[in-house]
Amino acid sequence: MRMATTPTTQIQRCQTRYFGSLEYDQSSVLEFPEGLPAFERERRFLMLRQPRNEPLAFLQSVDTQSLCFVTLPAQAACPGFRLTLSPEDLEALGLEAGHQPSLGRDVLCLAILSFEENTPPTANLLAPIVINLRTLRARQALQTDSRYSVREPLPLREAACS
Amino acid sequence: MRRRAGESILIGDDIEIQIMHIGESRIKIGITAPKTVPVTLKEMKLVGQENLAAARMRSVAALRHMLEHLIDSAADGQK
Image 1 (cartoon, rainbow over the protein chains, first blue to last red):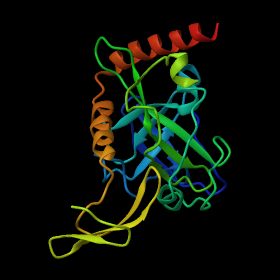
Image 2: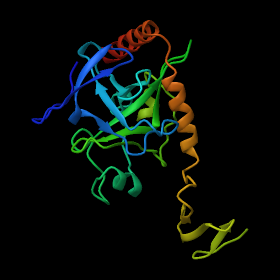
Image 3: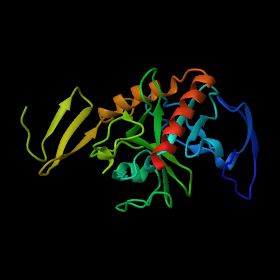
């Protein structure tokens, strides 16, 4: 289990949905100032990764043990994926106005996965989670001009990504 | 209801929708509403429903089974 750490450590403990009880550094918590749609009160998440589940990333709520989203980097779900943030999203994330951030350098972009019985897993590429890597402020950012839906089948058809 | 750029629509006493700019394929609107009234894009409702579905994951065993399937197929795709 890997988590971002900084020199100032403030270790806390969190009960997780899939990984039992974990210690985490307060400074590694992702802050969602407005929560997520339908989960407006969930403001703090941990991003958990395991080598054996790469490239998956688990977004575990710090305050609600039972809430853990399974996500995939948007570009892993769809190699041609391009993120477009609205002026409102840029401001809310504390990013420079009028300038689209670089994926992987400025921001991390994760698609939430959905698993239904008897159907392939799907990825929400219409509204990926965007994390400002410098501040760890995060937000679910609707892609208004996107051709993607909230349920893109995985693995994605190449045609849909080109 | 027909409006030009710069004109407004009132809903009740304290909600105003103003047409700010009309472009070729999109319009810019300004909304003034009390803080208690959430103003969101309609698609966000769909996103909320999808978040609820994604959070409704079954057991850890079921998750593991599906993850193995997903990772296997991702590995196949890279061959």
